[in-house]
Image (cartoon, rainbow, N blue to C red; front, side, top):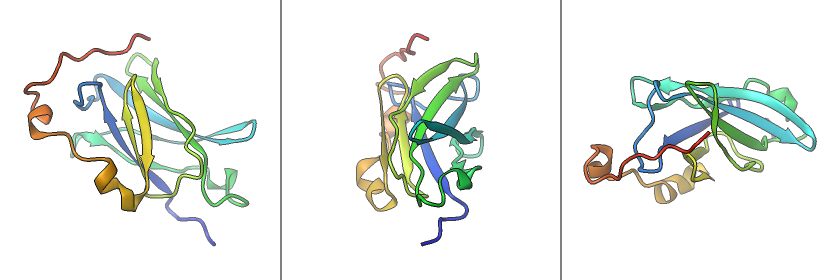
Length: 142
């Protein structure tokens, strides 16, 4: 079966209080493919000013995993504007194109396939998104 082209992963990025980090806090989210002892940079996500969220990561090095694998084993690193890694995800095995990776910086990360996203990744409440009733943001130490 041919590999998806373009091959992309959607990024949902949040602070522990479920607010979205902005471009003055987080610089990028880098994606790396793990194949045994070989680690290959695959792409990066940046802030999307039109949505206030993060752009998808488009795989830049598909030949690093295909063939023989149809899906990469991806790990994501969240980098601050001070060029510090503030969160490193688990390695998501055989993650399909179009999946969403939800990262709560310093706390957790998970990936969902397209058909699972609606139930696994509910949108933050409007009160939290508007900043009401949200706890004070605590950024992880670097």
